[in-house]
Each structure stands twice: as C-alpha cells, then as structure tokens.
Image (tube, rainbow, N blue to C red; front, side):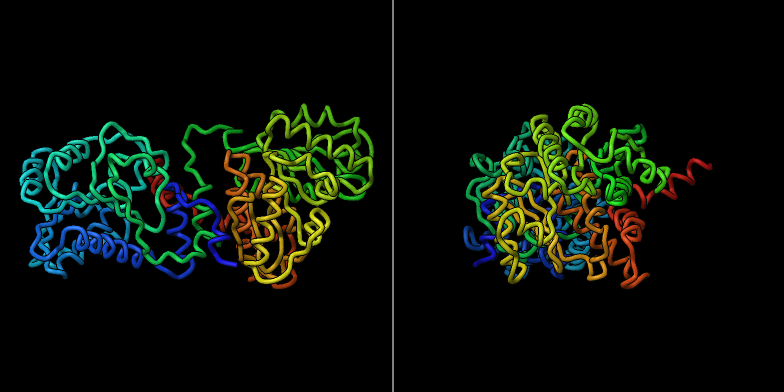
Length: 528
C-alpha cells in the first residue's frame, strides 16, 4: 500500500486545499520558510534548464504576498548561479505580508551587490518597470498566486499588461497572475507565461488555460505526503470565517438534535451544548416528553421541543421533519433508544431528510437503526460517526492494523456505500467521503469517558450548519474535539468528563478566529 492510494485521485488542488497543505506541513515539522526556499530554487532550476542563468538579466516582478516571497528566494538562487536578478516589488517593502516573505526580502536587501531591488510605489514608476522589462532576458511573474480573489486592479492590471508586452521569456510562479487558481477563470487580463512552475501539485485552474500557463512544470518542494492526509490546523482554519458586525441570530447556523428517550437524556444535551460551543447560533433538542424536563435542566442555553410519549415512533416523523426544515443541520440518534419502533422512526426520518438535501450527522442509536439498511443514506448529505464497534456492526468488517491500513479500509467502505464516515478509532480518527481520506491524531486515552462522542457529533453539526462540506466539517471537528480533550486532560487527567471537553472548545477555536487579535483595539476605539 502506498500513500498515493490514500491521497486519492485528486491530482489537482484548489487554492484553499494548497493553503491547508502548507499549514499542515508546518504542523508536521516542515516550516513554510523551507517550502518557500525550495520553491525559489525550483524556479531557478527551471530557468537554468530552459534559457540558462549565467550573465542573464532576470527581472522578478513581485507582489507583497507569499508568491512574492517565492520570487525573492528565486532571485537569490539566480544570483548565486551568476545571473543578474532585478527584483521589482509592486508596493513598499514595509508592507510585505507574511513572515516568510519578509524574511526573504530582508535577505535580498543584504545582497545589494548581486541583487538590485526596486519598489514600484505609484503609477509614475511604471515607466521604470517597462524599461527594466525591455532589457530583460527572463521575467518572473511573482505577483499574485493562490490568493487571487477577484479581478485585477491597478496598479496590478498595468503591471500584467507591461509583462505581456515585453519580449522576454516569461515564467509564472504557481499560477499566472490573473488566473483564478481554483476555477481557471481569467479576470480580464492575465500573464501569458512560457512556463508555469507550480508547487507540489497542479492547481485546478491551470487545466485548459494553456494560453496563459504555457508549459506546466510541477515542482517537488518537500511537502510531506502526510500533509494531505493528516488533519491539522489548516483544516480548522478554513472552517472559521470572520463575522461581520451586522451578523444576526441564525446567520451562523441552526442545529436541531433529534434524540433522547425514556432511558437517556444526557447524550442529546451534550451534542447540543457542543454545537453551541462550536459556534452555531441556535441548538434545539427535539426529544420525547419523558426526558424533556431533564434536558431543559442541564442548561438555560438549550431550547427543548418535545414529542408526546416515552420515545420516538413513526407517528412523530412528520412533526420532526416539519421542524427540521427550519434548521441548517440535523443530528439524528443520540440517546434515542434501541427498540424496533424507534429504529423504524429513525430510518424514516433519515430518508425524509435525505430527500430534502438536509445536512445530517447520524450517531449512536441512529447508526444502529441503519445496520442492514444503509441504502437510506447512500449519497445523502450526511456524516456517519461510528466508533470501531459500530463500524463493524454497520459494515461487517473490523478496523485493524496501522493508521494507514485503517484509513484505506475506511476510504474503500465509504466509496462502496457512498457515504461520509468519521470513524472514532483511537489513537486516530479516520474521515473519508470515498474520494479523500483524512486522519486525525489529536486526543488522548482519557477521552474514552462516556459522552465525548456526543461532543464530537455536536461539533461536526455546528460546522456543517455553516455550509461546509461533510468531509471538511468532520475533519475540523475531529481536530478541535481532540485538542479540547487534551487541554481538559492537562487539568483533570483521567478524571475528566465530557462537559470538561465542551468547556475547552472555545480555547481551541479562538486560536483560529481572526477577530480575536484585534478585539482590544476595537474596544479601545469605542471607549475613545
């Protein structure tokens, strides 16, 4: 078995996927500074192979982001090989974004004999740019890469036109500036490169854009293969969005938890509380009359709606589905019970919600209800969250071997049944939609305590309710839950409870939330 089989059939990455891989590489111990160094060297290698470097005037036209940093690194390697690099920064050096790009800019500044640096600060400097381009043997497009989000604006638009007007051999780093790296859309104008040196894997937007990309060379920059498989901070960061000031209740997700019965009340409450801590605006528990009062007593933050009787039965299905229509994600299963009448109701609820295209998380007793009847969730917008025992019950196969062997088995099963699985199999969780597979290794043995699975279910639903894919939501939730469990274990050891994990969720998530860093500044301005 090879890691290529685990990494899947996706030979192209979107911009977001590449950013996740970058961050997860650092999580695995390969810093982005090293990846930038390797990217710069790869660009220099390609130029040396195509045109030669020694004695050549090579103009690097750079932006203020990471693609610019790749260009600064390339200029240094070109200088070391006898080339005559000129770096033209569109903007000010003081405004360069990103630690790695700043570091490479500072190195280039110290090489003031072998690298010439110019700053294009306003429109008047375009004549300087055109002069340098007119004398160049090679031009490197290091302007905007995977960070492109819309049409090019001035001065970038004029800079791209100037690059296209010159006669030099043109090399674009990662994607030609002006080409959307994920969709391939060209925003009015784009660099027309002779060669595009793309890092790690081709970006999806390169396909079919040969007019702009020229020859595409894929550079191996040392990204660990595991960075596409292991769940890391990158997977979490891209499920966190900045909340605008005009946000109102409900904009950030409504979760309905359908669960609980005369025997169990804690599971649905834990799932709902975890969903709230995960950032959704509303979490409602729909449960049987027999335990509704107990669930209300857990927290004033919980809204409880009850159905008549001791448990869910088929006569409650219409009421559940009508209620679910007003929610962004539905959790089905925690504490529902295990008799055949409950199972029948569960299967009908899942089938009806699938027909509505409603995102779902199916856990615990909901999974038991599906044993032997998985066709009801085939192609559903749902995440199934079995532990190892439930996985065996559902799919008649056990999880054994290394994490890679487990991951391959989960991927194959997910593909066969056309479902998304989040398999809780300590010491790693395995997540797959049958195409991609992710493995999460956060967490600790103290999380065998009852209720932590319900916490994971609620977290997954919370992220799903904000419109993310099943795979993305399940992977991020798995990382957050495990990290919160580790923080709880630092305080409580093997005496922690599921509620301790819930309490630590905000501590994990706020590390990824962009508004937190500037909160004190905002408050100071308001006081003034």
